[in-house]
Image (cartoon, rainbow, N blue to C red):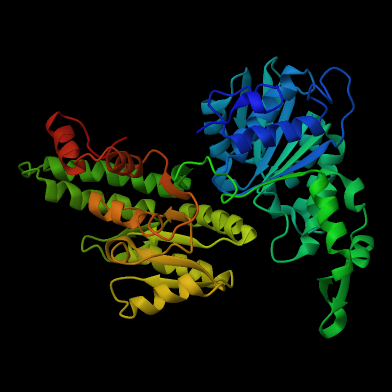
Length: 495
């Protein structure tokens, strides 16, 4: 259900969608801070803060809200160039979201490739439409001088908890870039992750007048240093209210629990680009699989659902990062693209203090996911075909606040268990069974769930992942579609 516009201030959101009430409120909050609201207004009214934070949980639409804000700033004649800095794995999300939602003229480029190619792209972003450049944090630091020379009017720090540490290179670059931009936005579930001291760096980017320019002055004012060697900052009880009041002066907060008009479940596609080497292997395997179906130099094989899905299995393994031999024994990891995307999602979930359910098909993927969680120091539960104490694994995920993730194999963890301690599920990979797909989704969307559910699908761009997800969503018979493709002279594995 979208909001009743008559009960809210009048400033239309230039987007091709019906926004929810909290998105309209967030839009008005930022526009008010930026001097665009009628009462604070466009056309010479004062800017209350040149930097704002959208502290909106995953699934509440902070990207859409940001796109609307950029459109409003453009229409008010305040900006010409926008720089969006985001984790590497979600750069493509911005391109897709602008395409779907922006109801104004713009030109968007994602900076990719080597440094010279990125610079060449940047230098060509000079047209009359709004120029939007999207880049990852590492590249923003390395290209800082060139980005500064490009002179962005608005800088967006997506997943802003990435700059929570004040003295790392990426954070310092964002502080310097932000100081030169007319407007700044920071997007994250919350600026306070596991340490309240993390607020400083993010607000130094947004608006240094809130907490000052000196980290040590900030730390001394708000924290006691305790523990061995006095190295652990603990927020002073007497300063809690002041810290929160200052923080929320320029921040809009939205949680799933508060957004009562959100749908019960929402699907989020997260496209992942395989590394060039992995993509070459994938394309060779596509050709090889089609040749095998055609029989090569021998007589063509009888194409059935079984043998066409057997070859699809190898391609699906590869999009998850692994390649097997003819006996489907995994011999090597060829891609970490999905793992990197998952790590960014984990960062966001941990920052918000939210649990996550991760579903995958293949055991090598599950082992890689568990290794990632262990490297990050995150406790997790796991159910695969070989796990016997299923109830114990489920119970610790549901009841232990320290267990942040549940990792499950789709064929064995999708039945008879309740995982409502999480409202977000990541499909790292999927099998071809509609029943398994629906059963897995029902683990979090069931009786006892008190919040809207989000389903994130990690899909390798230009691969069979796209075909599998489309078939599952359309409730189509994937095997029949592939067999029909082959019989009509098409390579069923080509996208």
